[in-house]
Length: 166
Image 1 (cartoon, one colour):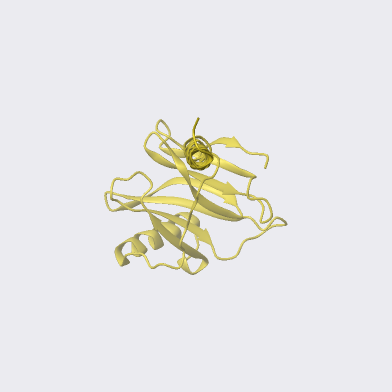
Image 2 (cartoon, rainbow, N blue to C red):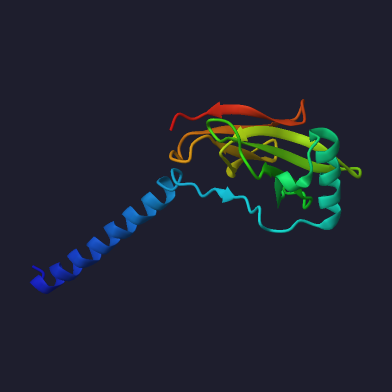
């Protein structure tokens, strides 16, 4: 028969082993629910050449000037080339939705990759055809209700994939 002290040591080590097992299981299988979204930085300056090209695009295609827009720079397809998201400075309508444009530089010109109406945009954690998905939030009060836009190679544009109810 083993002395009572050994039973105490074994019980304590068994408790640590069970705790470690639970932490590992939840760490591996439970981590899929939480996601960190990449928020766009519209305050960071973009390169002057891109600013000039985007300004020309806005003037020619939207018949506005850049004073009405803010720009965020990011790499949506991990090719080390920047894409740009334009956001209206003032949003209009009853729902106060903003117009967001996804733009890229191609051969010295700016091309439109997507257009969304939303209160806010964030970059998703997932990629479709190697291009980062975009989440368009319609409400200031509901972080779980958003539209998911994915890259569509045939149209060379972002398209609506799914709406979440939140």
